[in-house]
Length: 205
Image (cartoon, rainbow, N blue to C red; front, side, top):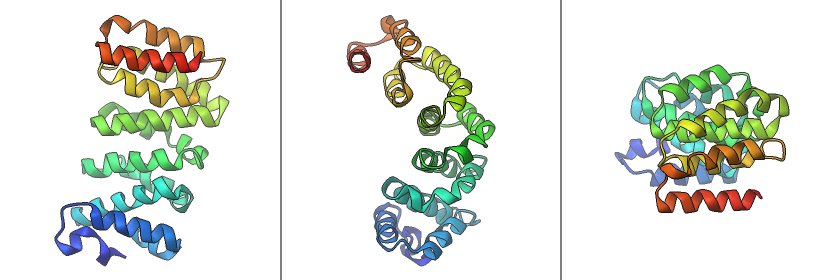
């Protein structure tokens, strides 16, 4: 499967990687998917980058096909290659809903990636943490206060999107605290940002 990656054809776009992901989703061939997983560890950065792309494209279509490789995606968060870091976190957004225990067991590494990560890494880490909260009440007791703190202190331009990501785990027990955190930042938001947050609040009532 490695020979079908975009880099093997001298391509810098993602078309071939997406096509390969679609083919693997159709075939469900575990051996071929594992070959792509192994490719994440390649010393050839182009191969590793293409492999993580293929894997999270599979995850967005057939998350169960890559769920068993959750630990590998967490391992990618410590890479010196930023593409692998945010790609690994993107893959985790796909597998967390169906493999939350394995993700929660690596929570310190996810939080560390959040702390030092790029914008894309942080965006996706919020989705991962919200999915963990949704999956398990014990996880939520530990993680939801962190999400509240984040939404109270993140940059105003990030707040609406991150609030939307967090909203998947909001229930009757957490709704008031979440809505209060959003309302407290109303004066910091632009008109469009405020409208987006108000729409979210309205949907939660």
